[in-house]
Image: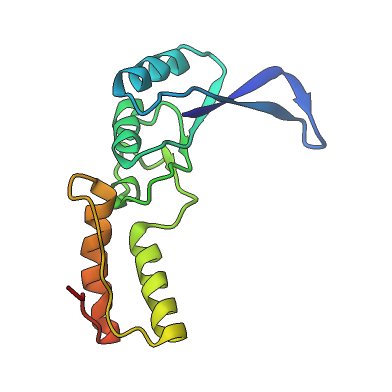
Length: 151
């Protein structure tokens, strides 16, 4: 998990903006370490943003934990729950990556247009929220192209 800090005492640049520093804390995929890292970041008076997350489950956990106290910029997950605007996350999640739905539709469109795709097979892990969501959108997005899943 990366986080941005701002040195509020040293303006820089033409617009007198503040210097930003990106720091990275590795949670090694461990929820306990992620919680420790989030607590550390919350206690940094100059923390102005969180960046990245290695998994959908961690990104969703971070979003619910920070409760818009600090912006979460570019979670690496394309999960729709990180794109659903609520009063709680309206200003807390800033997405750069396309949604899973956009990625799936774009991939199917490209494969169909370039290679006359006739069907598609999809292997996914049922306990991964990102794979489960992608599977849902693949089934939905094949329909406009007259395609179906192959077994």
